[in-house]
Image (cartoon, rainbow, N blue to C red; front, side):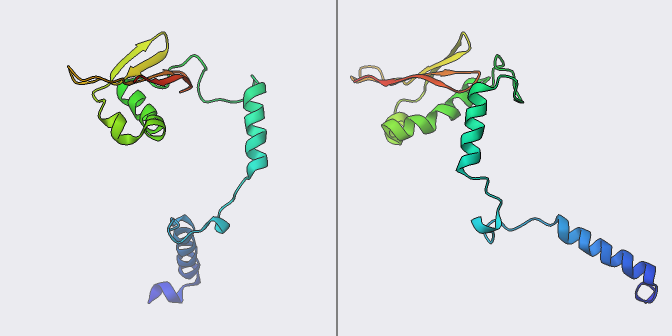
Length: 139
């Protein structure tokens, strides 16, 4: 074979094989936490402190930009919160939700079938940063 006899081709073939191996994806099921770079709690605490105090820090969005732009996204944001507080079956039974974007805030509540007694959830979320301003449930 011409490739194996010529040193230039052999070196090129070896470099190609190394490049393919280096670009390969790692099977996440075979990778454990000890093979990952973990930044740790101290790093997380430092980042939180910086985010709270340093107004000049890099941020990918302007604090006045709406990041939760439509009711479908708003509902995807609030459902895990509601499920954990009030239970998935309870919240699912309150569909369809009422969802209104008012002054950069999503005001979302559950609905009940006509003639049914009871209450529904109410959640108000800032559309610019997903901060929950109010979370309640009627009886």
